[in-house]
Length: 286
Image (spheres, rainbow, N blue to C red):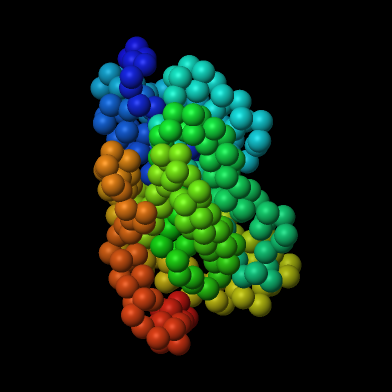
């Protein structure tokens, strides 16, 4: 492990065991940040540590469950005490829950919000006192193109990402006087991650004893979702944009990532809503 330099900027990345979090942790470390790559299961961070050791990077892993108040508070406190500062937080941890609202249980909805939204809120609240004292810091929230527009059979995921977009925009104003910047990264489809592997489908949708009235729609959804992957970008592209944003003197608020995100958001902005709605309807249901 590279010795800690007290003048070295410090970054925390959540959900670092794979995909965007994995690549972002490496990219920040390669950009000379002292990087704390956090994840729920530390065993999944072994490959990250091997790369860090080989490249002599100032990167270490920390166990962190974004769903747990105590885990977040303890881990952030330990990092702050060890590194004496926190300059960048990248809120990346999340999962994708699919299912019609009628099929989703209240507990499934709560679980989606607990990780995708409240997980980010916990980290933000934990680092803000440190950043305020420093009078500097950058908070990066990985939202999604789906935090700006919605598709069918994805209400839980959209709700969390729309919420994170709203949160990001609001706290951007209230943290600015303290020298803290807030950035939203809005990727479209990203290939080579465990995100799709971590896809969860509503239990009621999958129950063969009581077929869902939305099961036929789900089949169409699966086909359309696979088509979206043809536009997918690698997670390293997202990581590169994050590093450029946090090292910029004057970063943008929103960064749209991927051809699918750019085209969809541009269409939503220019088309009458009824036409845009018809386009999404056709894309997913024919």
